Image (cartoon, rainbow, N blue to C red; front, side):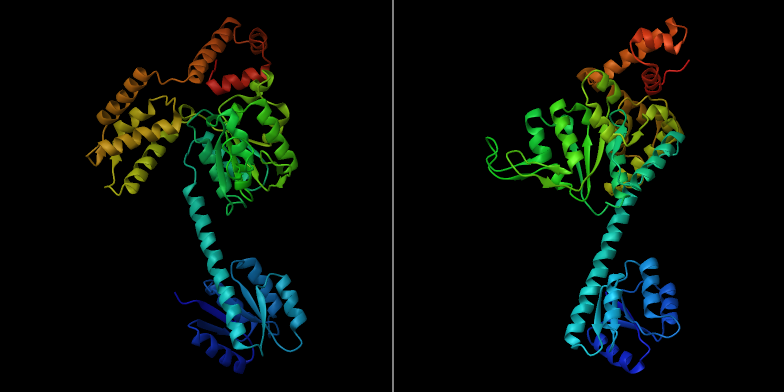
Length: 449
């Protein structure tokens, strides 16, 4: 695709000569003889790849044009055209954001190199912006419920600053997707997003995984390894299931957050890091603190901004929207004919409690998309798919210990509230917890009078 350049100079003889040189290189040239015309052209067509700008212009000066371009078209590189006696001003313009400057009596070959470099920068910047925009669109969150609208508000707030974020919620509620949404809508979007599932890494390997190690640091360390903190430099490190880390590892994470430095295993030297931390957990960390399982100082370091993601059963109005989204997504990815769901099929989905949350709903929709030969998925097919999942769960005893504990805890709290006539203070005393903790438990389990 031919690069399009805007040449702004009040000397018609210079413009004609310079235009010939640039056209010989295959560039498309638009011209303006003063700053006002240049700004009007930019307003009508911002798709220029390079602005070649003289500083001594009538009506609107080159410096004023540069300021306007920096504000309204920051992705457009500017090459300053410097004449006799204007080099100091051209240098000042580069400090204001101009890519570089050329002199009118420069060797044309030198000028063309600068033009090529500036255009390459423009194209790379636009490509980066396009990729960032695509990432933002990809990680746009879905949900129309008031509960999710509150989450979206907090995502925007979190994306707009560099504070640490703690995301809480049950398994399968989409905590990593929210972390990615924060990252890809933040100023760090061009940097890496590195996710670590702390619960999935054995205790004897997690330090090396997070901080890296030097060659020979331990048996099997044949080469130096970069850890996740370093891999996420200038970007975001997502520490999933942070509540499953040991107290010793929590102390090392805390030190890294406080010092913005890490030490690889086996190294005597520290390495500077520039990383934003987003952590997530399905545990009640305040309760874990009272039990002595989680460091209070690390908690307050992480919980600068907290996002509590509601389970799917507490935002049933989102189920239909999510189901149709997943159906469209799977059909598109598999390049199959578009499918839809009947009203009855959606009603059946709405009646489920979804203990596995969004992850479980997504799995069911994918199963329906794969197994159904019909363009319309009806209630019978949904019921059969759900029945097979329930049967499979019963056969494999798929309920986790945490889910079983949550069921018992919710029932125990509800029964205690009933025995105390719903007196919060008396119930908290019997349970051995404070009132604030009890309120949070009631909210989490959906316990209401």
